[in-house]
Image 1 (cartoon, rainbow, N blue to C red):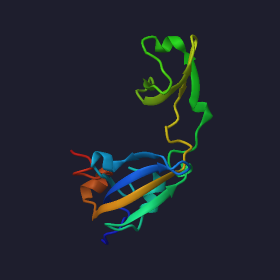
Image 2 (cartoon, helix red, strand yellow; image 1 turned 90 degrees about the horizontal axis):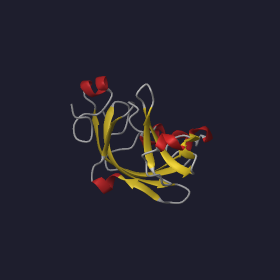
Image 3 (spheres, rainbow, N blue to C red; image 1 turned 60 degrees about the horizontal axis):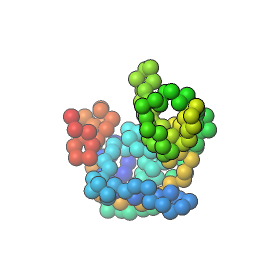
Image 4 (cartoon, rainbow, N blue to C red; image 1 turned 90 degrees about the vertical axis):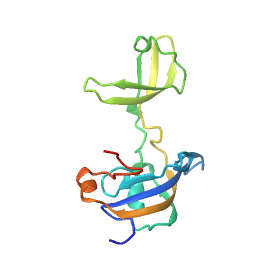
Length: 164
């Protein structure tokens, strides 16, 4: 196998994520010192980034633009909803407060308080990066062939990957 990013390769990389429109740095893997490690083709990172990394090699750096549709999708106005204030009785509300709720099926839903009054609380359940075109400054640190177990389990093992 060549040392380039391709299906069934395990890739480790550092990134700095920016908002394309404003240039605002949103996050960077370098802050934690831990690179991201993933199995190509397993759906572990957003498709727009993974597809644009194909063919990159160890040591290569690249600025990768990912439109909102291939990142976290467009903002969905239906995911901004009002709920009765009594659902939040013991919560010290403030705008921007991140909250979690659980569906009857056990699925966790992340949301942010966008407004509230005496009667209702308005929450936004869109991903925080929904609707934003993104730029990833990527540096590929390592590329290796995936083991049969990694392919079977559909994720990278070892440092930066799953530990089991």
